[in-house]
Length: 269
Ligand SMILES: NC(=O)c1ccc[n+]([C@@H]2O[C@H](COP(=O)([O-])OP(=O)(O)OC[C@H]3O[C@@H](n4cnc5c(N)ncnc54)[C@H](OP(=O)(O)O)[C@@H]3O)[C@@H](O)[C@H]2O)c1
Image 1 (cartoon, rainbow, N blue to C red):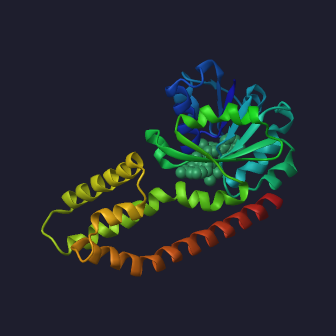
Image 2 (cartoon, rainbow, N blue to C red):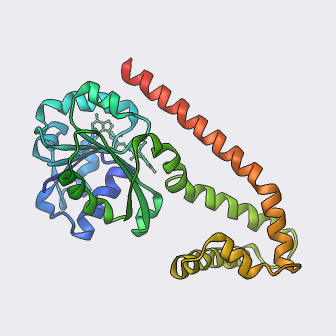
């Protein structure tokens, strides 16, 4: 299976090097292109370097690791070089299948990675258009599995899915940043140590839930004995926190809608 990467930026680099380092694709079968060709020097030893068209022509699966504003132009450039069966994978959640298909009616997938892919611990989201067959899904899955778990969703749920998997590391980090900052006001424990305590407890709690198949409510019940100290805290969280999180989702989903609208205008324009 020949794999192509178009765009050697943050995502293209991560995909190429992960495929190479995990051995899921042999280096003879890896192809890469980028607008600024000099940047590809560092990839010379692990992949064939080529133009977008050469990469498209050589690949059974081609990943478009480019920004939404560049997708239409690149698709127009490569469409005649793609074999009928080539699976084209877009990494951008804002550009709908219907827009991609207007340029060329192909097998398309959209993949939303997460920063946790760096430690092979991601929940990578994927959706497919109607032309994609089971064999295409099976071909893509092991590539994405090199970064962690692979979760298929319908296209219309990729937005909320992205909030829950791709944006969530940012939400989690900001929530726990606030917790550490607020804790600092009530203790002489140095911030570094507070962060360490919270971070390790956070990881331990997640691991406990996964290993013991516990729900959030199970953990709360286990720790917050009625009338006890923890319960005082959990009551505050359940009373005041929902409003903040509701606002978070309202704002991010609206931003997502506007971004998709802008991507559509760019695409049509
Ligand atoms: N970064 C993330 O965490 C993340 C997460 C989820 C999804 N995504 C999505 O993934 C996509 C890529 O994001 P990114 O962060 O990797 O962007 P990036 O770092 O800006 O990389 C984009 C790459 O595309 C190259 N490029 C631009 N036009 C090109 C063309 N015509 N032909 C070939 N290469 C071209 C650029 O080349 P130059 O070297 O010339 O600039 C650059 O290397 C985006 O659609 C983004 O929305 C990103």
